[in-house]
Image (cartoon, rainbow, N blue to C red; front, side, top):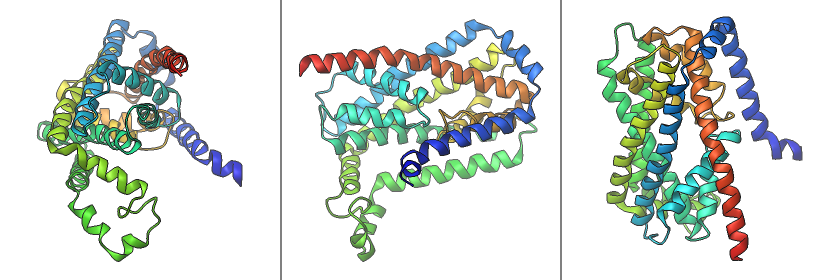
Amino acid sequence: MKPLKKYGGAFLRVAITVIGLGFAAQQINFNQMVDLLSQANWIWVFAGFMLVNLSMVVRAYRWQRLLVGAGARQIRFIRLIELYFVGNFFNAFLPSGFGGDVVRAVEVTREIPADVATGTVFLDRLSGLIVLFVMGLIALPFRPAGFPEFLTLSITVVSVGGLVASFLLLDGRLVSWFSRLPLSQKLPALISPAGDGPLAKFLAAVSSCGWPAIWQAIGVSAIFSLLLVGWWVMATYALNTPISLAYGLLVVPIFAVALLVPTFGGLGVREVIAPILFAGAGLSDSAAVSTSLIVFLMLRLSGLIGAPIYLISIWRNQKNT
């Protein structure tokens, strides 16, 4: 039982990834996909790769705005950029889209309290999702003719639900009300929003950032989201199956939310939903899955940059101790 408990999460991620890839493989024409990938325009792949790296700097600035709002002004911007590249390395090669967030939070606790680190990392991720939800809703009225109705409904439900849940959490009044209930007082300290437990400290750190910093982070997230849509669009250009930026605004938020599913870097889940999402743009199943694999390649190549940065940071920390 102990090995199952210890490695159960990793087994689940690998299993979902394998099942997803197996299902996707049954839907595509391998010969067509091989032809598409072999004829890919690597200039567009490189351009998308550069956008991924530029997004690390943009997201590091977003994180800095939240840290400054929480009173943690002592961390250098270049340090936050380093940590984002390191986090990207762990996201790329660990079976989870959130492994890098944990690494960033742990690393930055060398300089700030753990609850502030965790709270700002959470808000950093949440602000990005909020903007993606908004962009999806804005793009819906401009969806092309023939866009699947069930996708319209899915985008609406996910986006509206995500926005409502996000702002209820950020506002804090609902959490504060729940923390005063007798039930909340009886919960274990680890998951209770009341008292002095880890969750209570985390929520306090989130509220300490303040709305000015949160709005700044949301504004920066708008820039990041355009970069995110940009590298997906460039992946379709690389395969000579281009989609419009407007169509990218419709479907990329769904791909981003897919990272919530425990897989190996989103692999498997994205390949399953890609044919459905790109059908409205006229892409074949093979072209849709190929696009997803090109994006996966861009992210993995960018992730490799974080490896030497991480090794240098370890050496630097050991040298200073």
